Amino acid sequence: MANKEINRRDFLQMSGMLGLGIAGASTLLSSCSPKQKPLREAGTYYIPELPDKAIDGKEIKVGVIGCGGRGSGAVKNVFAAADNVKIVALGDTFADRLEKLRANIKENYGQEIPDENCFVGFDSYKNVIDAGVDYVICTAPPVFRPDHFKYATEKGVHSFLEKPIAVDPKGYRTVMATARQAKAKNLVVVCGTQRHHQRPYVQAFEKISQGMIGEITGGNVYWNQGMLWYKNREKGWSDMEWMIRDWVNWKWLSGDHIVEQHVHNIDVFLWMSGLKVAKATGFGARHRRITGDQYDMFSIDFECENGVHFHSMCRQIDGCSNMVAEEVFGTKGSWNSRDHEIKDLQGNVIWKYDKEAEEALFEQHNPYVLEHVDAINHIRKGEGLDEATDCAVSCLAGIMGRESAYTGNTVTWDEMSQSDLDYMPAELKIGPMDMSDYVLKTPGTAK
Image 1: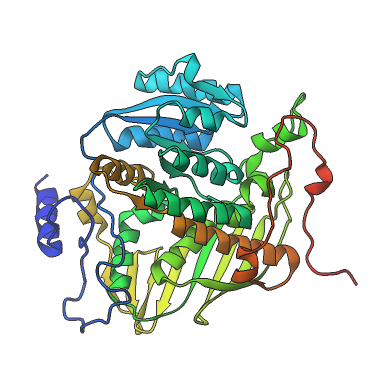
Image 2 (image 1 turned 180 degrees about the horizontal axis):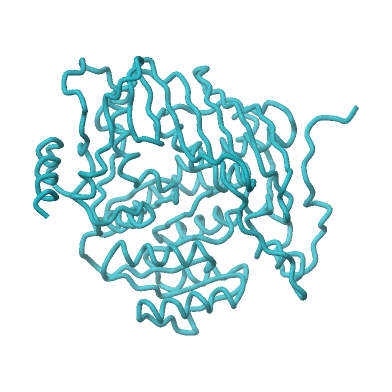
């Protein structure tokens, strides 16, 4: 206990923290570094406060759209993030998933959602949002996210949007327009790109913004892991039901895994660098996937507007080398997320995140919880927050990479942002579908 207190005092002295916020809470291994030219001017970028729990305040009435695994996880996270939170409405395409979460909430949190606030079907999101909620958790399959966000914003409801928040250009444009409306209404919109609420990443972003690695010259981003879950078709399931229950394997529902999962890493590079993608040239393939119509690997060269390139690599295949990480290179040094450290051009570590100090200062370290802490703090303070705009930009970058791999062609930001590509089926109903529309994409032409 004594050692923990010493660490805490030392950390507070070094960082000059004035509260439990994360801003400014970093430790340099060298205090004699020359004056740095900032990459961003102070006050032009957002550094969240990340206390263990949200401030006390009014009851937050929460609705959940999408009661599967991620929705259930988000409910657990929001209860950990704040006191005086009440789940008041649930919505899902399928009753069995809704009832499972409903029972979980009653058993673990002592809250019972009445029958009249439990809604099933494709339009259930409207009923949830109209049930008097302050804050809606949007965790249905990603293709539906733009419409859910749009309706919540029209009704003046704060949103948590699990990533990705768009799987096609039409969805991207919807989100961008809705984000402007949400900002005008002073609404809080937090996205599931949880690195923005993970203390090592936030401190690294602050150091990079202060100019520690200089001007950005490139980077690498990776999400290589084993195969994700899948669901074989069961007797009685229609085409639509099977695809929605197996959504993570179908490109129209998930955006393919370069968008659904790897968007995290793409987003980190764009966030840290402040750059915008101009072109994507890449390839991908399918070797092992069991269901759906997606690839299971992508390799993309992204070129930014100023000519800087970064490489993107993602794979979901068992039995291969795995790595989930990001690297950003600059004229003065580099940062990597594997070690959460910054090195100069000679390879000397000039900054490293102090995990021991974090352990001494904080009890809550889960970024999936801290993103809701940040959201509820803003709601209770009456302060708006827009994470949707940046997240949508990262999603469109992933979409560019996907479409380049599918076609074999270089894809530009301008053509993709203006494209009429729309993954949503013309009619949403449980029943048969024309499955010839859901086949593997093959790039180039055969010889």
